[in-house]
Image (tube, rainbow over all chains, first blue to last red):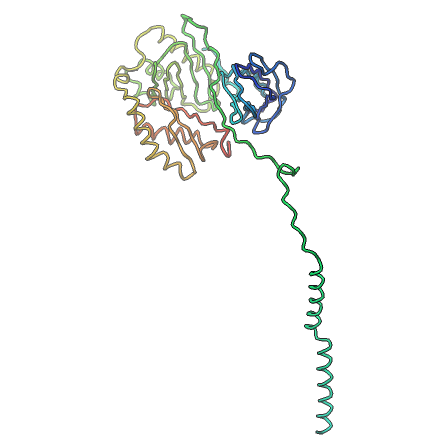
Length: 114
Length: 277
């Protein structure tokens, strides 16, 4: 379980946008995204992040309370302690009041050419 | 009546009078009567209406139980497309006893195979070549990957040994020819037979074994002869889950269906009730 210093997400909205603020559930605690830019209307991309500085066991993007939010692409940049920063891309997903999508990925294992 | 009897009767009369005047029970009764008079005068207090949840500043809202969607991350291409050269990447496990080798071409398309020892490698060029190296304990071939377990569990630096494995693998692939014994491919049972056998192993041996710890194993997926399971209940997040998988479940599955290859655990152990305890 690595210590996550901070993360930044890029959320590309598909056909269904949302008026509600994007929220991330980190270890089952709801976090608002900070340092926001862009939007969550159809075709827009929202960028934001959070300085967590905590051990991470789960992280998910929470669906809106009302309506559906279709995401074309989710890209998460992770900065964990003692690990080079890494990016993970998740495919299209649709969220609503009953769903959230898992966006946590452990740091990749070191790989070398042989 | 003599004088003594007369005196006695006087004392008895007096004491009876005193007790009648100052009888404690009577005084209590009179006190109670007064109290009850007082209580009767007081109007009964109306019970206050229950405070509504939304008005109560200390009440916490009911947590919304949401379904967590798990999507597979889009992986970057490890290798440049259409490269003629044999490219191999090595990825040692965190425990250090195994190393995954990823190759830019198929080694055993659609299937996987486990070579537990040198004897099992007979007739399979790939395994024979790898077992000729001194420190190889077992070989697992899966699609375009190899997982090598080394005998020496104290050596954590895989780089020299991985380079040796990579060189041998590259030579073999460049030579061409069959990598896996034809008999293995020809005698591969159908997916239905594998599924039936694995489900039987789970029902008859695996689940009764883990039930004592509140565990539950479910078969998630079969692709060719590659098995994916999920560990639930007490197994989810248990620190011994890996040991249970490698020493208990693997041997049980292979006893029921000897032809199965790789066995993967797709459990989200971090989401268990007591992760990693």
